[in-house]
Amino acid sequence: MDSQTAVAPHSAHDSSTTGRLKPDSLGVLGILFFVLSAQAPLTGIAGAVPIAIAIGNGAGAPAAYVAAGAVVLLFSIGFVAMGRHVVDAGAFYTYIGKGLGRSTGSGSAGVALFAYCAVQAAMYGLYGATVSALVDHYAGVRVDWWVWTLVTMVIVQFLGASGIEMGAKVLTVFVLAEFSILIVFALVTLFKGGGPEGLGLGDSFSPHAALQGAPGVALMFAVASMFGFEATAIYGEEAREPKKTVPRATYLSVAVVTGFFAFTSWMLVSAHGASRVTDEAGKALASGDATSFVFAPITAQFGSWVGDVLPVLLATSLFAGILAFHNSANRYLFSLGREGLLPHRLTALNRRHSPWAAGIVQTVIAVALVMPFAVLGKDPVLTLFSWFSGVAVLAAMLLYFLTSVSVVVFFRRSRADTRIWNTVVAPLLGTLGIAGTIWLIVQNFTTLIGGDSATALWLQLTVPAVLVLGLIVARLTRRPAVAATAPVIGSGAIDPGGIDSGGIDSRGIDSGAIGSGDQEENH
Image (spheres, rainbow, N blue to C red):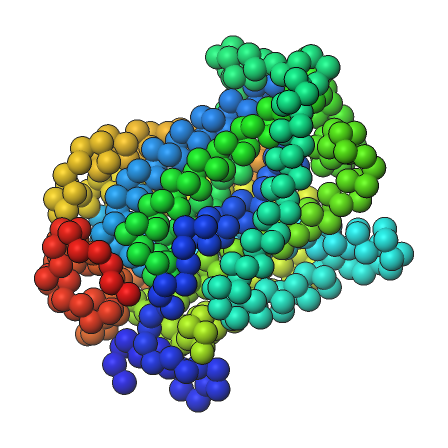
């Protein structure tokens, strides 16, 4: 059995003999829904917008989403350029390894896996608390939050193992439901001419409005709301015509997410009134229910029945995000197993070409992250959700930064793409924007997690600690003689150490024989 074989010995589940995810499974819209579900739109709006307004720049918060979208767009230009030459379920760490070397790439793999597992655990905390409150309210039955979380882990594991198409269908339903009600509210508010003070375009998007108060805090929460858009590249191996599908899905995701958050937050500001919105957001936070800032104007617009529907949609929003991050994390585990950095059994695929072994490991990690909070009796929202979401955002920003730098180094070294804007200027501008965002996150991390400074420091230190641990593992791990490397498309296969392999990629294609992007990916 060579290193590309994906059969886990003695496994009844495994019927695949290749370490290859199922190709031609997802189109642009399928990938888009995975990205949007990872954003958990209703969660992002109901959770982040009130805080961005109350302690950020008030009515100017919508401008922060536009600025965050601009930074992410600059980053995505280099990200897409790299994606045309590398298609792999490892995405971030594969890209980083191509430019900055195998050890740095392997270290970043640990950070990526940590980020996805942390944000999923965070969502499990808020999800468990939300479902517990719903069941108590409607059925009069009190069940601890962690019980619902464990039950949901089983469901997520089943859906993850059922194939990428099944996951896409489930997420499509949930994402459309939460998007629809928010967009309809925003459009109705727009066509009615806004709230008590009108639309207030200048109150939200003028330079003065954007820079008032603490714009850095608002920008920090805006960037946090966009975490997950990079999943477009993770599904490259399962995409139809990935050289076309992944770039389209990436740019469409950035445009949709930016437009959605900026437009919806603007209409919320308008619904409350620009002069009153900061006070209203502050009152919602002080009451302990930040969602009331968002739910109240929607209920006033459509009637009391919406007040019953929105909490349910919040739960399904969280479920969709949890499933999306489960799929992202298990594909990272799969890719790390294929690279030889983790046990090769993680590359085992079931009959639906889903990485079932990696999925089980990811679920075990989720249990390990969540259950200590349950055992210690910690509040699932104030600790589990707040702490892990803050850590995940910081880890993601580090990955964005390393990827942008790697893009520049990779293309300067390989000359696989000589477009200056795509491979130098945009990535460097994105790097500067991301570096500034990291600084803002570190400066305001205590605010981001809603905890104390000592807790904030320890949580921040986990990110570099995971990176260093990954570097150590990379130094101790030898690449197998026959490596199941990432499929590389372009002028020569550059291995993670930056050396031209000139050999055979994981599909058995002579990478040295493929022209510089002239041939389309053939599945």
